[in-house]
Amino acid sequence: MRAYQRGSGEVLAQFDSVEVEVLGGAVEQLVQACDDPRLGAPVGGHGDADSIVAEAAQILADDREPPPATDVSDPVLRRLFPDACPDDAGVSADFRRLTLADQRWAKVLAARSVEADIDKRGADGVVHIGGEHVTDWLTTLTAVRLMLAARLGIVEEADEDACEAAGEDDPAHWTYSVYLWMGWLEESILDCLTDADLVA
Image (tube, rainbow, N blue to C red; front, side):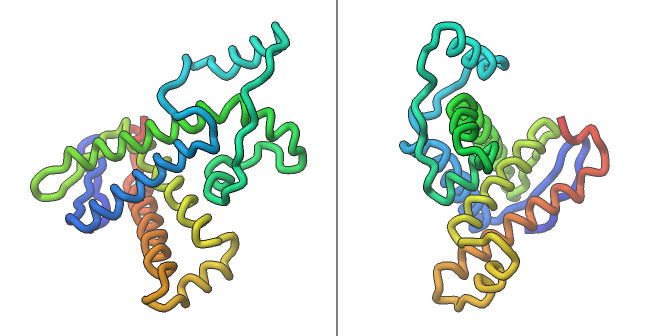
C-alpha cells in the first residue's frame, strides 16, 4: 500500500487484496475480543450519552447491586480495558462495572466504521476515509496494536527486539510484522492531519 494521502476533507488509502484481508481480519478479531463472553453480556448497543452517570445514580438511589464483575485476566482484555486505578483494585473493579459496556461499544462502533469504509473501496482499491471517520480509524488501529502487543507479550523495547529476532517459521514473526504495519498505517494517517477539519 502507498502512504495515505489527503483528499478534499478526507484521507485516501489504497490497499491491495492481501492488505484488505489482513486489515479486515485484524479488525474483526478486535470486535470479537470486545465481545468476549468473559466481559459479560454481548455488545449490542448502549444507552444515551449520560448512561454511565444515570446507571451510577440509580445504583446509589435504590441500593441496587452494580453489574457483576467481569473477568479481564486475559492479557488482551487487560490491555484493551486497563485498570482505571492500578493501585486500588476495588476502585478499578467498580469503575469497570460502570463503564465497560460503553467502552466496549465505542470500540465496536469505531471498528465497524473502519470495516464499512474498506467495504466501500473502489475497484482500484482506494478507500475514502471521511473526516468524520478519521478518529475511528485511529482508535481502531491503536486498539488492534494493543491487542497484537498483548499476544506478543510486548511491554517494553526489549520485547520488541525479541519479536524482531524471531525466525520466519515462528508465528510471532508474522504477528509482529502485522503489528509494525498497523503502526505504520496509524503514523501515515497522522502525517496527513495537517488540517484540523480532517478530524471530527
